[in-house]
Image (cartoon, rainbow, N blue to C red; front, side, top):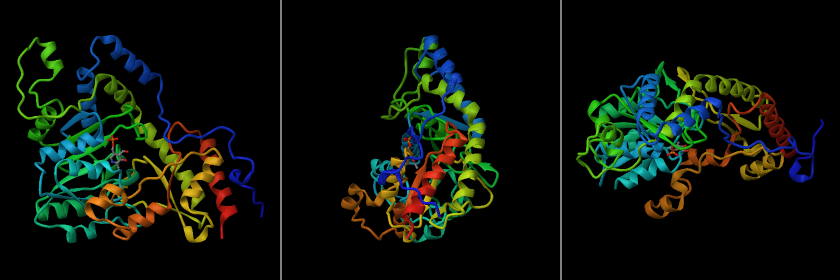
Length: 398
Ligand SMILES: Cc1ncc(COP(=O)(O)O)c(C=O)c1O
């Protein structure tokens, strides 16, 4: 068999130029849309943000969408509006970005982790009930990589125990569960427009809800607790406003919304390119016993935000970090999502978490690599990634 030397060992790299991770697809439409706002005389929250919210809520099938500066804010404001605070507990997944748990702590509440399923890396609904106590107030499922969690099971548990469901849908713009768009199912759904997500406003977020009262509170809460935002006041010469809560400052600007509108127009085409690339990756990796991919459950539409492989470490002479370094030497830049939250020092020191507490999340963490995956890639780029993975696997297999 022809085994070529990896670049890290002095061989020729698969690519001469770097293939970066998470490069956004920005076209002339985004540039024109942003320039129009820059020239319009109104650049902060105003008509473009309203239009973005209307189009987004229509797309996901939710009654309200409130645009914010991040998904982190979307989750935090949802917790505020749900009245979650001191002494409360909120159930979530350890296999997430730390902000999902951090915002629970900001409210004075305690995050309670429930381990993931080893095949989907989403929270295991069959393990949730044993973590419910009289203090539990909400469940925050995280749709890992863009695949929806098992929402029927989660909603059933929430109904039985009277809990709020606040979805971390940072990865799930455009995802569907049983023909329902993520964003139209639970009490609150938080989305991210961070640069590595399916659509981007550089940074940004959105929260959707069907509840009129909560939507009103979210709007007030995002801008200092003021009853009127600057656009309403200035465009109608209304000088008076009232502060009804000590609110936050996390309103999306019209510059971001202009970009978001142009990206939203492309969302379906972005997802179909991602689906095509996912199929190419899937068919290549299915031939390789050293690599596993994430199981896709039935009756969902995956948003395809990330393409993640899991190394079967028992078949390889190198570990995950070494594999990532090998890929980088081939000029393929990857990422790792996520170090389980309970293993970060704050969480270990504050709550006494240790290795072994969430074995499925920990085992996944040791094995996962997020490959370059974006509509910005060409098909040749995707085949370069496959060639690099194959080359490293062949050289380092046991
Ligand atoms: C699962 C998950 N939740 C939440 C966030 C936070 O999103 P944002 O950066 O928009 O606050 C991220 C960001 O990467 C994420 O991956």
